[in-house]
Length: 368
Ligand SMILES: [Zn+2]
Image (cartoon, rainbow, N blue to C red; front, side, top):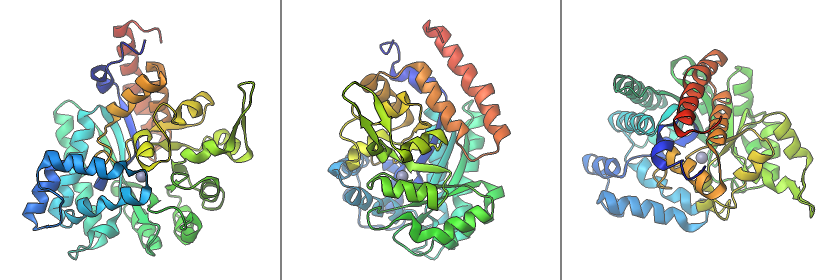
């Protein structure tokens, strides 16, 4: 069965993306273009092909800290409203061309103020780009809905401001709040006030947790911060014990996460690059799917990992034997876990995702 699921076919299935960083998905040619346009001199090379390779190689080091260094260059060229709008527009275009029908793309407004933009200007420019991307791709017959998550940097001290900013823009395209950056030594509880502000406003949040750091970080994010979803959460696997008879026992935390249907924003390629997983074959998404966790598959950083939703799904099919039905399951999981209103989620599931999967299954002669 996996033989028939080629990357070409996988590209045509509807996909839902919940974990994708705007500054981690810039086209290499755009990084080079913008650097030239705005006089940014620090790029390791200005050749787009060399640049694409540099990003991938630099991020292959097996350390989250080193991985994060590469963002200096993309963020370095995203300091004007024109640059931000362009990058956002291109993200919408690239995702729609990859078969993504719904995406939540995140960015940290505070990183785009080097040339004096206000936080509101940053958000406005990105949302404008998404909107223009949605309009263009609808005209091209590849409709996509793109919403924004605003990220605060966990090593900085502006999380309340960013949480309030995300609530302020809730009716205009921002659907949630996130926190990201170096995990070790910076537990989510440092930003409790921000999460409280989000919760008090009945708004949504996801927290990067359980990527570089283990169970305590996941526990804090879920039980103390009250997160709706876990950004990565892959280390939840540390709470499973594999018995000699093949049985898998869940610890209290992993049982809670599974039973409460806390969505895991899993990013296989990124996890292998940062050392959170040894290989795709050994990536916990296989076992977490088997155990019925609310698993979703995501790109994290398309530029740094040289990936796309099609590539991630193809890896799952080829390395872990995922079936078309399981790809649909991951997609429906993601749609259910999104931050748009429930009726809109259902509409995408029932009118776009399920009918298209059924049609593809029929064409491939797969019993669904
Ligand atoms: Zn991330």
